[in-house]
Amino acid sequence: MQLTDKINKLRKEKNAIILAHYYQVPEIQDIADYVGDSLGLAQQAAQTKADMIVFAGVHFMAETAKILNPDKLVVLPDMNAGCSLAASAPEKEFRAFVNSYPDHKVISYINCTAAVKTMSDVICTSGNAVQIVESFPKETKLIFAPDKNLGGYINSITGRDMVLWDGTCEVHDILSTEAVIKLKMEHPDAKLIAHPECKAALLQLADFVGSTTALLNFSKNDSSKKYIVATETGILHKMQQQSPDKTFLIVPSDETCNCNDCPYMKLNTLEKLLSALENGQPAIELPEDVIIKARKPIERMLEISKKMGLIK
Ligand code: 13P
Ligand code: SF4
Image 1 (tube, rainbow, N blue to C red):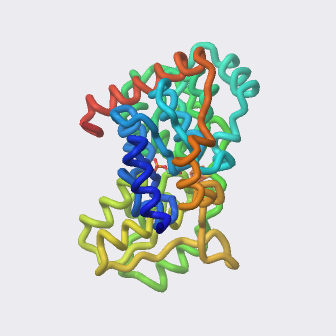
Image 2 (cartoon, helix red, strand yellow; image 1 turned 120 degrees about the vertical axis):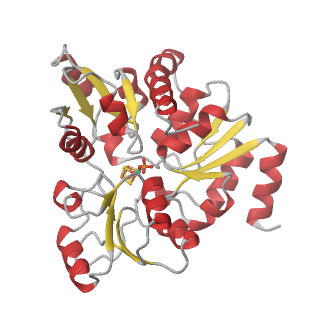
């Protein structure tokens, strides 16, 4: 039997849902029940009636799904699929940081561990960060963690002065601004679309900044025929599927590399996905008290996003 046939048979037998991020390899995106950005994936996880969630993404995403579904089996095809942003904020150091700003509220980007979520007032994603920040009165003192690029970008467009944790995404932070300038000169008809995890210098050159879903929608609905895309390569699969007549040029990370794959996202393969579905392993496990504390700020994010019409 083909790999995909085996997956299809098992997903039915086990009443499993396959959730995949846009940075997954094309064959995983094509077999998934839902492909989306972090916000869409969290919403799907919150709503699913499936007994088992196969999360084709990275650890913090599967952990979020488990927090929202403590009684369901949540598997991640490769347990080593981490994230440099989540790793940048270890529990002990983050607690000390938060304690040193006792009068601040804490907004954490979803790319963080469950432990950091327990210390947060609300979670955000790149798809709702502006609305989450603006849900606090102007005078409220805020900490934003762990992505200093996203936090800095939100500060710049909202006029806030949030205290930023010093973390970055190892994929987006090294996308080359010089390469962008060169590409813009070579392709003056192309628009630059960028993910807010990129450096400020690159974002300042962008025609549009947004989450992976927002970039995808922009590239579909906009009138341009050519785009310089500053995010992880996986998104090109859907962009090209949705707009076969358009050209997408990916921003390289340096002179020697023409790709920018997230090494963690790309650990998942169809073979590992089948194995996780078959064996119910590797499964996400979390202590009950962590689940209870971490769920509150995630639910708050989903409530605000619903109120703002960002999700249904
Ligand atoms: P979004 O899914 O919110 O666009 O974030 C991209 C990302 O880096 C996920 O790890
Ligand atoms: Fe983390 Fe960056 Fe990879 Fe997203 S692309 S999972 S933020 S390291």
